Each structure stands twice: as structure tokens, then as C-alpha cells.
Image 1 (cartoon, rainbow, N blue to C red):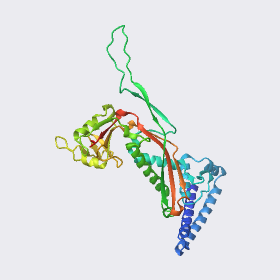
Image 2: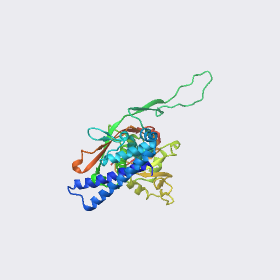
Image 3: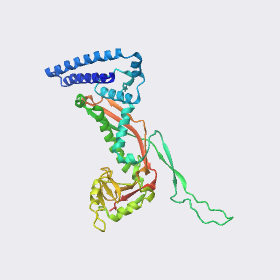
Image 4: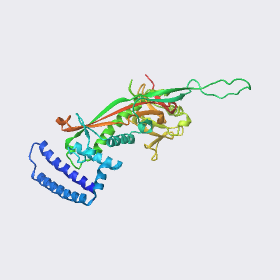
Length: 379
């Protein structure tokens, strides 16, 4: 067994020993006979591993040991930081100081490798964020775009020796700032004390789920004076009813997006809206919305994938029930320096540990031609 694997096995045994002891302390009781037997067996295993580790070190050259400590590769570094993160939550301090977490007054700052795992998972489970045009930078970002809404470049017949008339659009820009948002996840110490529980995966998943749900809601609905998201989409089809959608209105919505942007277009709606559309038929009695095992989310409507989100409004008066288009027309700026901290003391009275995450994000429509919306009639 390699030295790295031996060290990991030893550290896991230490975590198990501390978990047994901490459980008894928490419940204010002595360790049971079974727990003492397990504790003593773990102690013996650790001593045996220490002997093997020492022998492995003696068999290795000093240069190899220094290289392991000082010139850790990116992948190995990430693994070490992940192990340190799990150990810190469980109250175990890593032996190697170079990968210990930075501890402040209120908790420890989580390594960037863990934060990157969370952002990667947000990308995987939030299609709107995944499909949007993403800018992972801090500060204010100005994105220029060419506007031909009122005037555009046009070619015309000309007469020799006469001046051509100049016609052109104009360059405008959208400004993406950084609005601060935070999320708190509390982890039960009972779970933490279970040595078989994958604490890192749990924290990454819990944080990513909370962040992705919030981001998706903001991208779809926006918030006044904060993130705009798709709330400012200008291409619009008005439904004739406040409670129902017709096949013609769906066709009108699809046609609102120019053919050049149809290639990657999708439908976004609430599940209740999809359910209503599933009952719509064309003139030949064929259902418009088709079950498609090859589709990204299981259904296609007029040849395009259908994505449902609980963050989308249902069919109600004045609400935007459907978005259609290429979500690449939405710009999202997320600061690449996501800040994650572990709060060990704050929730001690709740028998829990807190993991708090902070992001800076903004989003606006970058290309208004790529996306259209269907708005229900206002009663």
C-alpha cells in the first residue's frame, strides 16, 4: 500500500476514535463495553499503521518525502484539501500544515477546490445557468452590443457621382454588477460523528442545490433593483386568456425568434403549463407536445426541447408562463472567487455545524432577439 493510502487509512481511524469518544461526551455517559472494544481495536490498528508508515518513510529517500510535502500536484492538492475540509468539520487537524484550513474569528475559510466543486455542481443541475453566456470575473462588467432597433445598415441603388446616404445602427452596452447573496447550510453533528458518512459530498450537494435553485429563480424572474435576468425580455406574445394557451400562440411565440437563433432554442415553463400543453392537438388530432426519449428533458414541443422549472409562474393573469429561445442571449456574471466558510461554534447549541457560502452575481439579457416570452392576459 502506498504511503498516501496508509496516511489516509490512519487518519480515518483517528476520526472513528474521536467520533466514538465525542458521542459518549455528547450523551454525557461512559463509553459502553462494545464502544471500548472498538476504541481499543482502532488504537491498535493506528499503532500498526504508524509502524508501517515509519518503515515506508525509512525506505524512501528524503527527497521523495520533501517532494510529497512541498511540490504537491494540482490533483493531489485538491484531494488533500478535501480531506482537510472533512477533518476540520469532524474536529481533526491535519498533520500537514500546508493544507490546513485558514481559521478566522468566526470559522475556517474553505479551500477553493471545494468551492469549485460547488460551482461545478451548480452548473450541472441548473440548465439556465449552464446555457447562458457566463462571465466568471469580479467587479463591474460592461458588455457592448450593436443595436439596429431604430436604424440599421442598409444597401441601396446609387447614382454615379452622387453621395451615398449613411445608415447604421448604434453601439450600446449593458452593465453587469455584483449583487451579494449568501446561503447557509447546517450539518447535524450526529451525521458528522458517523465516520462512514461522506461529509464533503453532502455539503457540496446541499450548498449546490440551494444556490442553483436561487440562481435559477433570479435568472427567470429577476428582482427589482437587483438581478434582472429574463424579466426584461422585450419580444412578447400576449395570450388571449389568463388561464389557457392555444396552439397558435405557441407557434407565434416560436416565430418571434429569428431563424438564425432557432438552432439552440428551448422552451421553459412550469410543469402545470406543460401538463396543459400536453392536451393540445393540431388539426390532424396529433398532440403538439411529444414524449421523446432522445430529448434532453424527455419532451419536445414543435421540435424543441422542453424544460420545466418550479421557479416559473403557472398560467395566471399577467404572468409570464413560457420563455422560448436560445438562453445564450442571457448574460450571467458570477464572481469566480466564491467564499465558503465553516462555522463550528455558532450553532454548537443546536448540535450542528454551519457552512455558509457567499457569491456575487448579476444577470441581464445580452441579445434581445434570441429570447421571447408568452404573457397571460391580464384580467
